[in-house]
Image 1: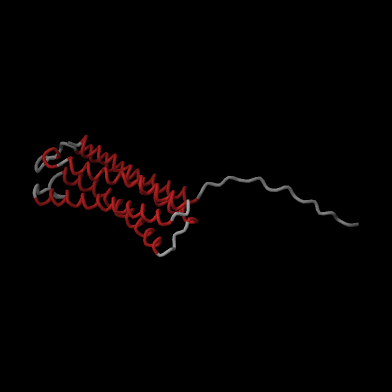
Image 2: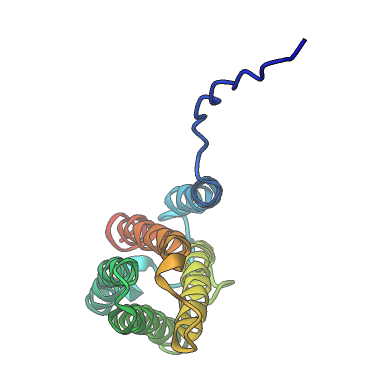
Length: 199
């Protein structure tokens, strides 16, 4: 007696989330909780410094606004860079990515100038008073994230120059850009907390 093989029906397609997206979303959620803690601490300590300079006496809004425009503009340039890579326009991708890195670098340099003035002219240090402690902690935490983002973007740029970044890598580069968008979004919260509410 011969057996007839009956083909099995195809297995139903099971949707699985993108691991890279899940990973970056989890990272962003954890980082958001950390930032939230620092923001709440800053708001709690507003006006509680008994001595030393107060925020309204030392925080200059004009240069911070210029720095903010540069940082927030970099979210736009990184989006254009990713889209260019998706379309196979590597030259355009590298140009816009370099623009993103330069805008981020401008923000870091601006923050360094602000801190230099606060320390040398206003004598505001981490240990000066509650304002100094909470200011440098919150703004410094954000600055650290900007530097990490810049290192990642610079690494992608260097790999791109050597021809190792291709359109097939667009998804991975997009995940790096998600982190950069997060850093930009957090700056809006930090800016409002420190330079609007905190003054």
